[in-house]
Image 1 (cartoon, rainbow, N blue to C red):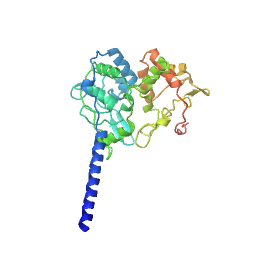
Image 2 (cartoon, rainbow, N blue to C red; image 1 turned 60 degrees about the horizontal axis):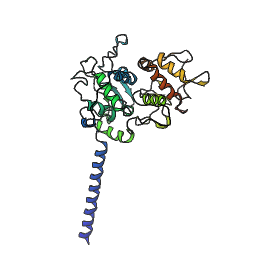
Image 3 (spheres, helix red, strand yellow; image 1 turned 90 degrees about the horizontal axis):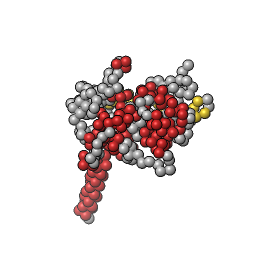
Image 4 (cartoon, one colour; image 1 turned 120 degrees about the horizontal axis):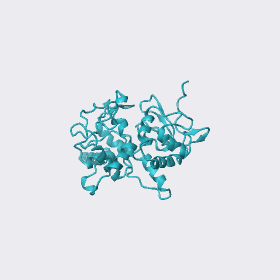
Length: 321
């Protein structure tokens, strides 16, 4: 009887170990870095002009242009990186995305670039931190991503790598990002809503995809992911020192009324609010970029933003006199 009981215990332990091994294997499979194979990219002749449009709406220069220590000499087309992005998890430093073959992305393949924007995976096959907003870039159309890559390759190479991210344990363990992606990196390229107009769909695409507006204008949970139920409803800046406004009709108001489509389109062009104030801080950088878009694209963004449902977000701190 004792031998029989010992045999059952060994079988039980073996079964538990097998289940554990299977679970770990499944977890590894589900959280491993994903890539887009070069074979998945059909032949394509890039549109450089459209690539510049994606560059402008994406605000690439806001994070990646140098030098950051002298804004008066900032060259928005020299993408050597280095901007410090403070967060509750540590400080991230924007990388060099110039065509430099050693320090930038000059040696990257097109498939590696698509993998970075769609899957959050580096050219070395490692997880990228979501300080890089690939949760929004994943919604970009493939040809737009390829056009952006082609445009970046026309820019001047800049030597010098950015410093390493300053992250404490356990946030410096990149493999943990696989679990984060499993929870929060969902979806794919934007699918137009057939019940909406072409203009609305263009605006929705620009705002939610390359424009990644929700990445700043939404509150985040304890894991740093956008809270979908309060998307566009504003919240604290990542460094906790400022506040990003609500851009639903509850937040964009002038004279007690929501901003009109015309108000929003005008603001995106010159940064002036209907009340006569002007955008400042990071939003001024956004205006510098989106003001370069066509009137049609800014109007489309305005149509979409004006259509957002009113959402009550976190309560901002009282304004200082």
